[in-house]
Length: 179
Image (cartoon, rainbow, N blue to C red; front, top):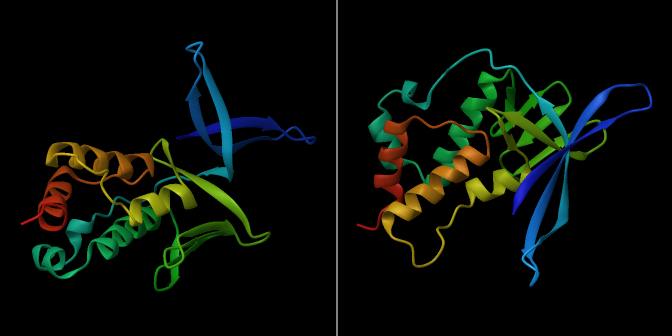
């Protein structure tokens, strides 16, 4: 499955983008049949104004050892959203204008109408689907460590969350590899 973004022109002439979760099924005739599975909301593109990193956390190595994987992932997402002008109003609850990212319930919505939204970050898309996929990441069965690492990294990238190579390797070694 992947995210397809469609562009539409409103009656007033404004151009807007909308995201959909799409699956592809190959037919016997070797032609693809694509089907929209879920509406992911209007796409909002935000400017990045700072470049803070999780490595700025004091005693980062201790933080990595003591925090659970889900909390570290939430913190990485939170830092990227703060870099894009979001403000944390409650723990794991971030707002920018009418856009809300709730890292407790893994929801991303427009608070004016409660509709789902998609945020374009770093040329990829953060929405409730990619957020859930990242926070609740479970490796595909029967993969070797290298394949799990690639799959895990791809999950970050597809959600628009950049992760420093050194941080990723430390996180992967500490939390993903079976010891």
